[in-house]
Each structure stands twice: as C-alpha cells, then as structure tokens.
Length: 120
Image (cartoon, rainbow, N blue to C red; front, side, top):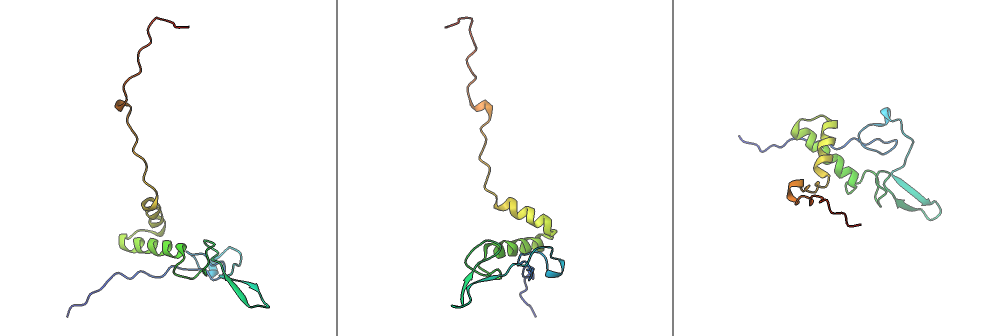
C-alpha cells in the first residue's frame, strides 16, 4: 500500500493571557490583553481588535498577519530543521526588501586632474 504523507506543521502557540504568539500563559510575563474589546455593554456591540496588529479581527483569527507570519516561521522551522530563532531570522531575511545594486567606482570616469591654472 502507498500513502501520500506530508510534514506536520503545528498551529502557532498563542498565550491566553496576553494573546501574543510564541509562548503560553504559564510562562507569560505580559499584562492581560483581551482578544475582543467590548465597546458598549448596553448595546452589546463588540469591536474586534487584534492586540498583535491592531486589525479588525480577534487575536486568534487566521486572517491576522501575525498568525500567518508565525505559521510561515513554523513551517520553515519544520521543513529546514531549524531552531525557532534561526527560522525567525531566515524568515526576516526572506521577507526583507532587496538591497539595491551598488554601482562600483570603476563605472564612473575619474575626476579631471587639477592643473596649475587658478581661475579665481
């Protein structure tokens, strides 16, 4: 029998105290931050606000850019067999804008040499 398999990539760890990624509430030193902010108790209206990016979604929503970033880092960590810190560095380098090509000095003509004539 043949089975198609793929590497398991776990969901990112999210702290239920501060709602940030990468640790759990038992190890959290941060302050309590809610995933959903209640604007008005009387009207029971909820304003969704992500504590990680400030977007209009809750902290545990998969559309959050931070959730997507953490998922990409975990995928890179598993596939490349890196530590979490090394995967973060590799992800940052892969996402950074390219450095513009520097033109070498040899591409420019040399400055004219100063002659003995003074034009003052």
